[in-house]
Length: 500
Image (tube, rainbow, N blue to C red):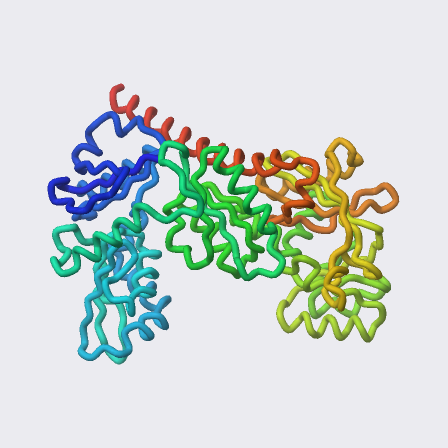
């Protein structure tokens, strides 16, 4: 992806950034070649972002052209909104107090250069403010009145950087524009930047290490430059063209924040926030399936007023689930009234609503992987040894925690299973889903839909192999290019209307 750094006067730009084009704001706004270019990342370093200034129009037209721009217009508006600054000051109050508590006096000015500060003790605060405002060069003023808070924050120009800071800023600039990627490639070998979000410490991640390596290889083949990122890289979401989440997702979690931010900035993302929201809460999912008339085991949404009716409605044994359970965690089986009451009491401490479901024992569960409204893999997951679930987290033998599996070609799966999986996935969206289905006497019954399904090397890829990984990467590329094409059409239409 081509990098363009836009400044008021290129003669004042003193930093050497390989593979980046330094141009004036006037050239970017007026030269037709920039209107028609695709796959462009714009770094707007104009000295003034005020309304209708050149700096403002650089970001505004960059968005209209489908270019990736930092800062975007939303960030620029935030600089001028005292209420926004106050809200942000309150939101990060703990970090502000922790970072500034050793200071004396009543005022402090923090200069933030490409997300960093010349003093390491202010690095965390600098990164957080960059994450929020997304301008490469910032200056924040803090005042002390019983405690520290932000009085103002604004972008600064290169001319405002003190001489004593310039050597460090040069280092920060090189790091900022030339990130050390997971796999180094020549700039001509890729079109887009992809961040794969992982958690190195997660015990049961949705993809094992070999699968991640396979995704990286497939991404490179599809035209991506790849970097593995973690939750600490939230402030860098805007640097990528696509985000692929390979960490267990939840709404009340940084994975949702990553997805939400990517979506708001027009970045292709799997899993998208809507899918996370719809799949991670089983109460929502159950209501969605009821409205959509999706076959499922008899299910009741449980609250304090109907808990006493469960025995009559479902009988024993029955399954009780917390709304946000995953990987069989937060899923319990009640065999009698005493056990049921104990499970309900414990789960109601964390959620006002629960899911109760009739127990439908089967030898295995189907998992149909769905992407963009079509099946991409099919697996049979067998129950763990001497257990009623696929996972038995209480097993003393680690090798017996998970049951066996079979990966099959899609065409060998019963047609009703595949059709049911597609029906329920289409109710949610066009993302990547894993639909769990039981075959109960020839009748498909949907257990749940996962927005972040397992794709492990040696399991889900046994049939599709490399094609499985390529299908995900090609989907991300198509999402990027669909957005770029739509933005380009808007620019063309706008220019046509200007000449009519």
